[in-house]
Image (tube, rainbow, N blue to C red; front, side, top):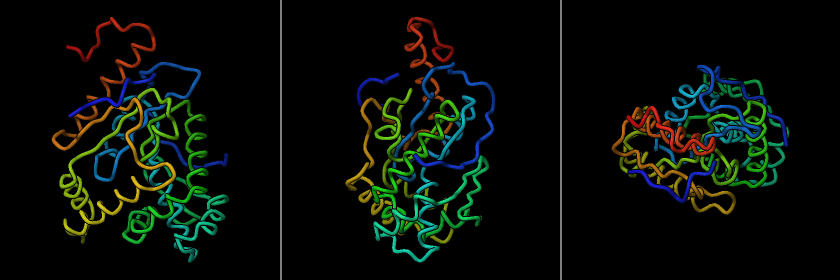
Length: 261
């Protein structure tokens, strides 16, 4: 199911690596970064969709969730309590990490690609992500990342609502809880469905209920329920929406679309 939450609107340094573009962007050139913002809860399909959409459009891709997980990994590795607001805030200011195009994550010189997806980090990441100093620092780095590249496809939980509220296209992907749990259980070894479902419910409550930058349906976002859609169908749907948005921006709203048949 697809819906709209209204109409589709047209500080620190970060050393994330880049995803080599698949080709020239079909979206044209603009004075402002050409950002596609994809938000949603875990298991909604946003990471896979965002990667494929970026490749199709010739844009670079950033998994902002990996940034919060990198900070969480560093917090735990240094023996800091994830709930210690001041200590975590002090850590993030000078934290050095890279997220390469192939998904490799280096934190403080350590390859943490696997560890940031592990259960220990997963249990603690919502606490770290709720820290206002962490959010402020990483939002600044995300904006800098996009400005340096002239845009990109960014996915997370507050891209359309906070990081880039004026993104060319804002998308909120969701799915029924049981579908999300089944997807995530299939991705993680040694975890059964009930355990995953309980953890997703816990994270949903934390992410949606936090005081700073909670997970919400951004104003103007395209609301897509992916429960009964394939990844290919979701990517095709978003590509059509982007094309329509571009025709609106260029003033060619009456020009037929290749995807209109």
